Image (cartoon, rainbow, N blue to C red; front, top):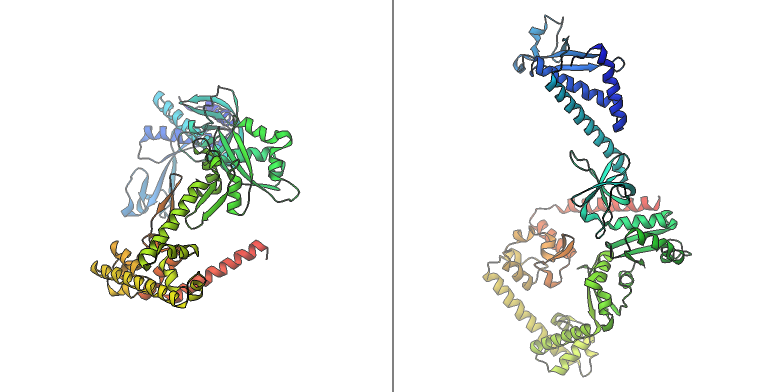
Length: 542
């Protein structure tokens, strides 16, 4: 195929038609044509040459040129596309490095193979431009709902026509056993938009919790206007869901507004979610109150929160246990997702048994260590004493309130407790020294002999070893693995060392070793405080 005057305008008409069909810039199609013609010309004149093609945007005439670049003598590698300053003097009066010499070359005739290759280049460029256009159009729409039309189903994944592009609804993003036929209307949540070289770029979902939140935003004007806010959402797609809402207008009930007149608003969402049952829960700043609401319809007797561990214990009446847990643990699982806490549910009877076991354990501790009879040990536990340290170092007046305890008895109790603790400390220190602990760690203020023993058992025997520890290694913590919170045990966790205390101990050790300059530390803290004050002022509009 030769590019003659007869088909020059046809190039531009083809480019216009393709651009219109694919909804992309016609210039991109012309550029693709130029590249494909240049590639074909290189196969004719030589791959080493720098052949370029320019198509006139008005006439469609294609101009073929050979470009050679002036380079330094020692950089000359490609004789077909480069030449030295000396060689360039026969073409230019005062050649400089970087100058180019452009010569027009005769147009090439495209054989069958070259024409096919040119067509592939154009198609590839058009496809890339189309994908770029789709990405740019949808990248800012992630997190919104879109209406589409089912095009086809591939291996359980649904390909959806979303207007100026396609999206994919993967098998695991469909609700239950949903199935669709071509041309079915479908409503989805745009979960993610990613720039991909191949395959889909717009990823849709019907199981994402935010899909339900966006549906409520569409059905409840108060949510759209910001009067009511959705604080948290938890879903078991196709089965049950919980949504926590709060109203910023005292005259509007957030739950009632979401339910609507005779349940019209929530029913519209339920119908879209294939009959998924939805519990609408009033959000509360108080974790315990919020959790009680989240466990509806079960009644809760008592809530105990362990903030440091991020766990919560809920006590329910015996007959409410199955309701609180739900079928296959569904109710407690959704409540846990909604509150972001690990929830342990126990009956009143189980809690009573546990408290009785703790009472007996502490009673036995005081009987064995302080040489007391059972009655006296029970008196100590009943007054709230939980360990020997409390008995040994508490103010004497707190012991005198116990029936039958006078000053002499109190002094004797404290003396026994201190003697036992000192003996325990001595044994722990001796064991630590047997393990090879050095004086630098023993003399470090803030660590008890039992702590030193625990560190030594784990191979931490010097102050340098201790200073390299991370705070979470000492205090323990929680990490999320595959969506589940997993406990990391700390070396000093059993001694109730908090994360902040662990940070202070490690930093103090580093300062003593000269690893950290206290002046720089104070400077950083002051900068953090100033930055915090600026943030507060910005939030206050100062």
